[in-house]
Image (cartoon, rainbow, N blue to C red; front, side):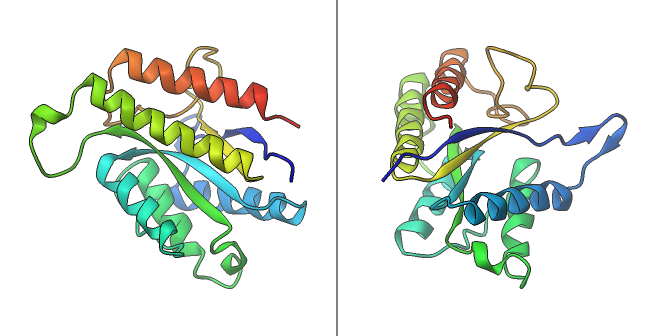
Length: 189
């Protein structure tokens, strides 16, 4: 089996002065997913800037054989929520189980001792997330590297991971971006 492809995927949340709705962004992901699967992709993942709790819930859903993670929130989370909601419709039902959210943990949001969450712990969690992406790629899945109008032209930080409400340490952010850039160069068609 051949490896998948890491695809830079521009998904702006604003075009000029006009905002792009979560629904329109979700449809762009779904349509790209259908196109890739039609052309032979085993499955498609979209990278997503998640909090720790979301990452855990998403991965547990997939381990149980499910597809509906019920991800919700603002910004990228609103897009993921809309994407999954649309996957209930006949138009996108074929993507259930074949289009997945691939989280990268950008912030802490779990119960427990806040002292446990530091740069070293965050880096270990992120490395696990990045290894999961590599596993998908090695298993033949195509991964969409989410970019937006603010990131696409930044050669050092081209991916829309860790912005918005997330405030991640520079070394963690740099590791994420460096690894995703490496995937884009190493898993291309």
